[in-house]
Length: 136
Image (tube, rainbow, N blue to C red; front, side, top):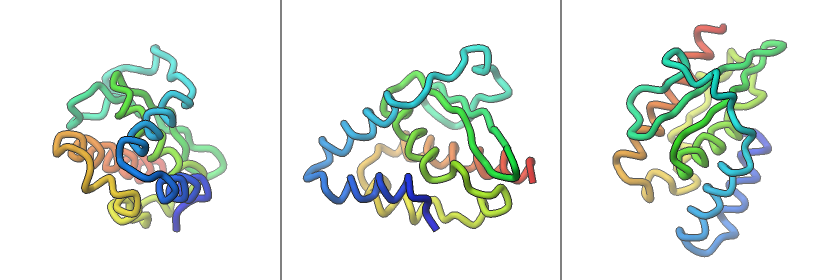
């Protein structure tokens, strides 16, 4: 059920030999994301439960989910880019059907992130699911 953009990330992860290269790739994905307008980085868009500062602003257009996101930590910004690839363009009603844990496990992120980062990633997924439910 993953999007083509997420499948591209999964294919790249399969190609990269070690976790140091994969971490660098995640950071590069974060660097490539468009910057979020600082005016949107407000308490209403902040994701609670993350050790880093994280903001997610939903964008719903023609019944499809998208979002802008940002973080003050580069690796977390990269994780936001991975989530963007997983969820962007998906119909709002289908967001809850995406098994983010299973999709992210395909990348091995569940085994290679610190517990703090894993908790933050779960908080971001929960926030995205809640935003989609509120929009639906």
